[in-house]
Image (cartoon, rainbow, N blue to C red; front, side, top):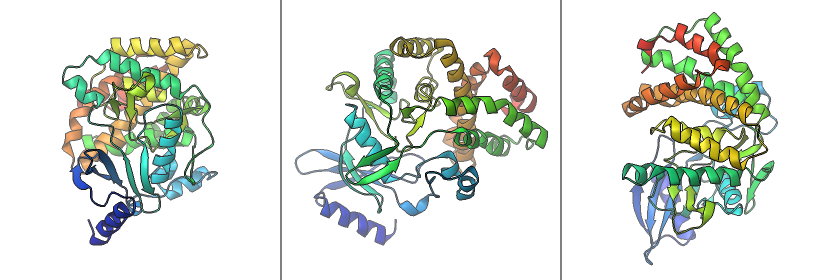
Length: 363
């Protein structure tokens, strides 16, 4: 880290009243953010997030055309927030206003990319389950959060303390460019020959109805990365507030299946088909406004699209960048993808994968 960046961080913490806190580095993720845990004199803790704004490509301007988004780069095309502090703090405020447990924001500088936020602890769902805590009650609570989150129409613009952030839709282009990363990165990773024009054209035609349905259903506030490593158990709280949420800065208006498929087809831990089915039943029992069979069909189709995205953009790309730990997650994600493709409505896509990605080229 540059001395200039460190000086900026120290100045920010001092001005926010946290200058005397002991700073402890905290393991982050594969993003361009870094985290520290702040230990205060009164024994309490906070998190300190550093997202240098110059490390990411441009975000999507409201009203930008598809061509303009593609020219700006992947973040704009896929409608990712590029780690924006404005996106994070405004999404946190909207969730907290719903009675949900996003971290309280104690101080922030959106232009500098710095935030001090509430420390929700270390009780990640994934960690607690690995330590032996029963998974079903945790998943039930997480599903109930989705019902609360989707109970009101989200605004066009999120706001918090003078900062505004547009809540855009997870539209056809965003879904397409994300899914298409499989075409770009999987052959490079697996030593498969690049896909030709005919295979790519068939891919586009087969996925197009899935992406169109995803955009048509994009009506609810969506965390976008809703899974067991981004959810924390807060048993001292009540109801849906028992589920703490982090890493929601890429929130969009999306299909009501989107967060559920991340939760129930978690690329980083096994979720049994039985638990997945039970949690979908629980969700649909509380969402009587949704037509069960069409919803489940779109859930499976979008889950297949997401699995292709994860295999390409996340796991293969990260492995190619020298992070081999992501290879361990690939077989599970392939199993999810193959399971979704058993839906008769997706048999065309199943046939595409069978022809163009033989078993020996699947992790």
